[in-house]
Each structure stands twice: as C-alpha cells, then as structure tokens.
Image (cartoon, rainbow, N blue to C red; front, top):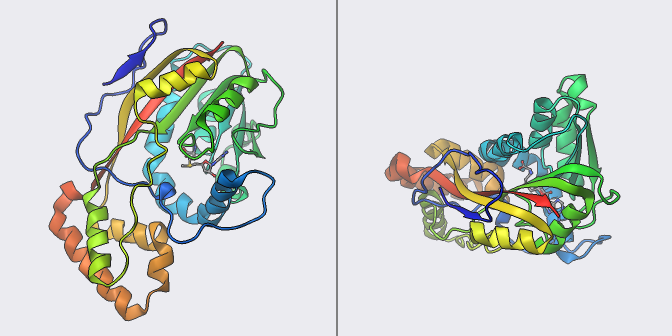
Length: 317
Ligand SMILES: C[S@@+](CC[C@H](N)C(=O)[O-])C[C@H]1O[C@@H](n2cnc3c(N)ncnc32)[C@H](O)[C@@H]1O
C-alpha cells in the first residue's frame, strides 16, 4: 500500500491491492467526435462535462456506474474511520447516480446528505435510483444542480464533504477543493476518491482498436486520463495548498473482470455506442465477430480491467 503525507491522523485502513498490469482508459474520459457547443451559465470545461454527462447519463448508469460502484462505496468505509458528532451534515460533490449518497445516508442515520451534480441528466438518474429507498433514508437526501467550484451553500455549512471520481473532471482541481473547504466548518473533514494516472493499456481496449482498424474504422484516441491525479503525494500537496491540514492519501485499485460478451455489450450499449449504432448492420456484425474472436484469444487475464485509485482524507484548517 502506498501511503504518504503528514503524520497526525491514524492510517487509512483500506485493503491492499497490488496493481496488476492491465489499465483501462475510462469511458467517462473518452470522447469521440466534436464537443457540444451549447450555451451555459458557466465556463467551457464545465459546459462540456455538463453536456457530456447529460448525453451519457442513462448509458453511464447502466453500463459504467455498476462497474466502478465498489470503488465509490469504499469512500463510505473511509468516512467510517472519521470521528463523528450526532447531527451531521454531509455534502457529496458530483453525486452521479446517487450511490454514495444513498449508502452514506443508510450508514449514518440522522445525517442530512446534500448531493450536487453539474448534470441535470445525472440528477434525473439519481432521482430515479433514490426513489426506491426507504422513506426515512430518501427524505434525508437533497439533490441540487451545481458545479463543484460554485457550491450553492453558505460558508461552514457541512461537517463532512466527500467527492468520488469527480476531481479529474473539474476545470480547476484547486478551485474545486477551495470551494469544498469554504462550505466545510473549521475542523470539518474532507474525503476524496479519485482515479490515479496510469499508462498501461487494457488488452481488451487494444483488441477493440485492432478490430476497428481491421474494419477500416479509426481506432479510439486514447490518452483520456491526463487530468488524473499523478500520485498520492501530489493529491496531498494540492489539499494542503487548498487549506486542508493532515492530508493522508493512499493508493488502491478497482478490478473488474469482463467476459468477451460483457465487454462487447459494454461497448455497444455505452462506451462506443455512437459508432457501433451508426454502422451498417453487416459491417457491424463482422466487426463484432472479429472483436469477439480477439477477446476470446486474450483469455481472462486480458479481460481483467484494473484501474488504480487514490483515496484521501483531510481536515479543514
Ligand atoms: C465519474 S462520475 C462519478 C459519480 C459518483 N460520484 C460516483 O462515484 O458514482 C462523475 C460525476 O461528476 C459530475 N461532474 C462532472 N463535472 C462536474 C463539475 N464540474 N461539478 C460537479 N459535478 C461534475 C458528472 O456529471 C458525473 O455525475
């Protein structure tokens, strides 16, 4: 386990996972085609993510959120290690489908959970998902549309601010963390989960690129993870700079085993739905058959996706 940072808080006790070789380029980072030129009340980068998540909300909820949910829910375990008071307000920044908000409201009876997301489409998905919760949990979760760097709450509102897999998407990581600090009370806790930058490709993605090339299509561009956190110590440094003390970050990994069929479904229904749905049926059938043959040849090891993650906790100065 890689742990770096100031001494002063106890070690975070997430399970150690050694990092295997295969690394996936996450679909939320991948963009095919031109970006949407839409009007927005906020600046360009946020507009882009807002439009993008509006567009992919349903596919994301069905085909990607369940894959990374185990890592998102690890943030609840991390919060469980923080000291708590009886009446607590918690903010979830970039709530997506609301999986974390639901889990923390369940784990912490009596806590009010405010959840914000920049995308109305994602909030609609969250509303749907949360509707099935028991009433005593549902009524403690409040959803708001807002960007992470302009939170609609007065200074010092929250005891805890948490954010899972969002800081790679915000226009300025520093500004978003400063804003999270602003809405925390002095002594309040911050908990962050983020993707860690990794260079190694995921063999299944490479097989898809090879199948695209063989079909006369353009392979996907790659390199979508350039805004990921580079290291545990880099995250600790930006947390200190943003006004947090005792930051502790540690590395972990999310592992997901695809089958050839589930990887194809994931591509066809979400990750590269744009391309596959627009192909002529014959060309698409031939591409898919070629891809399935390549994926089967990889065997289980080549279909094992490993995404390095970093979890950090800090205290608001
Ligand atoms: C990868 S998802 C993670 C969702 C959720 N936290 C989870 O772990 O399941 C990223 C979420 O961040 C939201 N997002 C992207 N940019 C944002 C911004 N600038 N401010 C707030 N939310 C943002 C997206 O709409 C999306 O719902």
